[in-house]
Image (cartoon, rainbow, N blue to C red; front, side):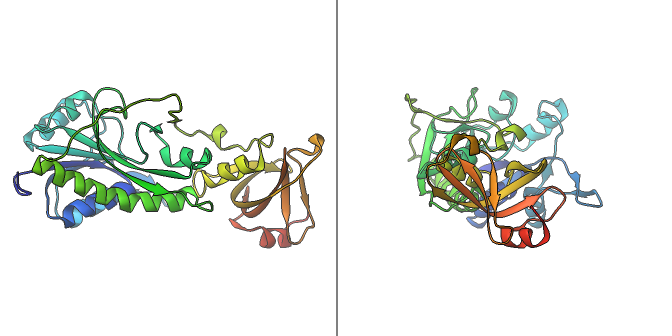
Amino acid sequence: MTKGDCRIIFFGTPQFAASTLQAIIEDGWNIVAVITAPDKPAGRGMQMQQSDVKKLALQYHIPVLQPEKLKNPDFLEELKSYDATIQFVVAFRMLPEAVWNMPTMGTYNLHASLLPQYRGAAPINWAIINGESETGVTTFKLKHEIDTGDILLQEKVIIEPTENVGSLHDKLMLIGANLIVKTLHGLANGDIKEQPQVLSTNTKHAPKIFTETCKIDWNKTVVQIQNHVRGMSPYPTAFTFLNDKKLKIYDCSITPQTNPSNMIGQYETDGKTYLSYTGIDGLVNLLEIQLEGKKRMRVEDFLRGVKL
């Protein structure tokens, strides 16, 4: 099958997906339509904003569909009219079977983990929160149960000790885009073999992150707390409280030491250069923070304007 014969429909919304769409376009594949989220109001003026995927598709004059409901009969009929050979899904919501079962060669997904590890909505966050030293990206074929389909290709990535979810996201975004292109070539040439996912006793999951998930538990080790901060930075951001006000923490260092148990979760500061909280086995030294009602800033700048 040639690139021209392959009729691709692409599903995606954020920049992570747009990077993949760009790679497919630049490699010369025939993208017949793009499905993305409806425009939404955002910003101070609440102006209607297009998704990153839609902006890119319009640059290349690719038809864009933005269904509110994926089971809508009119949408399904329009989708069918594009006669897709393959569909690719990157950072999009769950598809009903009527959608993913439509193309002749199936629907494939890019997931930001080494499946079956970290199935779920937040694989990049949880890999860092759990202190992993490596992760990766996987392409797999969709089936009924989410993130369970047969694997096509994987590529590993080292997680650096100082890396946060923002930098790892950007790294995986580029590697994932290239992996999708490799997957397309393999499918077109017929030389790619699907492998079933094999679960083990140490398989970890990546559930959706809620506000309560972001709250720091000071009864954990300082290493665990630092990983928690890294795994939430810059978004959705780990937080604690400072004098009853919400304090977001974007970056921190740690000082392992023995501490009395009654000091856990308490802060100490010289009012000028440092602000630290106590974990069960040391200090967590805040480096970049944002107090409720204030701007994000380095801790030294924060202490210049606040008396604790």
